[in-house]
Amino acid sequence: MDIIEAIRGRASTRKFLDKAVSKETISLILEAARFAPSGVNTQPWKVSVVCDDVKQKISAAYLQAYQKGEPKRMDYQYYPEEWFTPLKERRFACGMALYGALGISRDDTEARSTVWEANYRFFDAPVGLFFWIDKRLKMGSWLDNGMFIQNVMLAARGFGLETCPQAAMAEYPDLARDILGVSEEYLCICGMALGFANYDDPINSYRTEREDISNFTDFHGLD
Ligand SMILES: Cc1cc2nc3c(=O)[nH]c(=O)nc-3n(C[C@H](O)[C@H](O)[C@H](O)COP(=O)(O)O)c2cc1C
Image 1 (cartoon, rainbow, N blue to C red):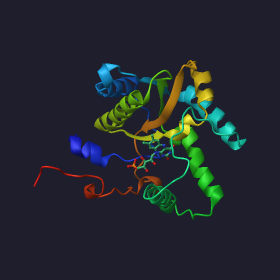
Image 2 (cartoon, helix red, strand yellow; image 1 turned 60 degrees about the horizontal axis):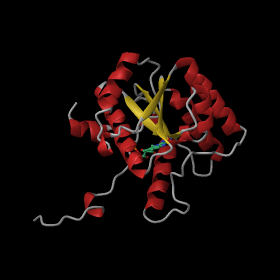
Image 3 (cartoon, rainbow, N blue to C red; image 1 turned 90 degrees about the vertical axis):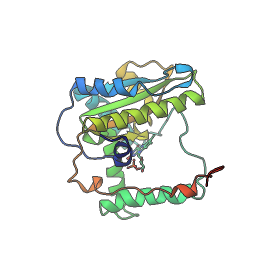
Image 4 (cartoon, rainbow, N blue to C red; image 1 turned 45 degrees about the vertical axis):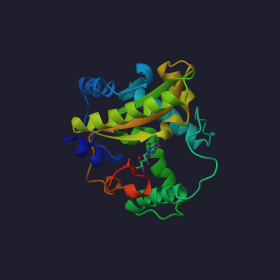
C-alpha cells in the first residue's frame, strides 16, 4: 500500500468482522512497528497482545468496573482540566460525528453509554493490544511510544487490517495488569482494537474532519 494512502485512509474502526488474525500476522505488524524512531534508540515500548479467553476475561473485568460505576483510574491524565477553543469544538464535533452516524441524539445518555461500553470489548475485534511504558520514563519516551503506536496502526493496514486506539482500555489499568501479570512499574498508555473492518456497519461509515494545514503551519523562507 502506498504510504500516503496508508496514512490518509486510516480511520478509527469500531466494528469488526468475526475473522481471526493469526499470531504470525500480529508479529509481522509489530516487527514493522519496531522500526519507529526513539530518542537515543531507547525503544521504550512494551506490548501485550490479547485474544480469545484472556481478552474476554479483561473485557468482563472492565465492564463490571464500568457498570458498577467504579471511578476511572488512568495512570496519567490524557486531557486538560478545562477544554478550550478550538479543541473544545473539535471534541464536540468528534462526538457528534460518532453518535450522529448511529442516529443517537445528544441527550440519549443510555444509548451513548452502550456505545461507549463496546470499547471495553475492544469493539469485538479479534485482537486487543495494550501499550505500556516504564514509569521511570519521561515525556520524551511517551513521544516515542506515540510514533510506535502509529506505526502499529499503519503496518496493520498493510495487512488489510484496521484499528482503533483506545484510551478507554487504560481506564482501569490495574485490572489489565493483574490479569496479564504486568508489573506496577509499567503504566498503561492505551489499548487498541485490531481486526478486519466491517465496512457495512454505520459506525464505520463516517470520517472525522481535519484542519487545513494553513491553520497549524507557518512557512518561513519559502515562496
Ligand atoms: C491515544 C488515543 C486514544 C483514543 N481512545 C479512544 C477510545 O477510547 N475510544 C474510541 O472510540 N476512540 C478513541 N480514539 C480515537 C479518536 O476518537 C480518533 O482518533 C479521532 O476521533 C480521529 O478519528 P480517526 O482516528 O478516525 O481519524 C483514540 C485515539 C487516540 C489517538
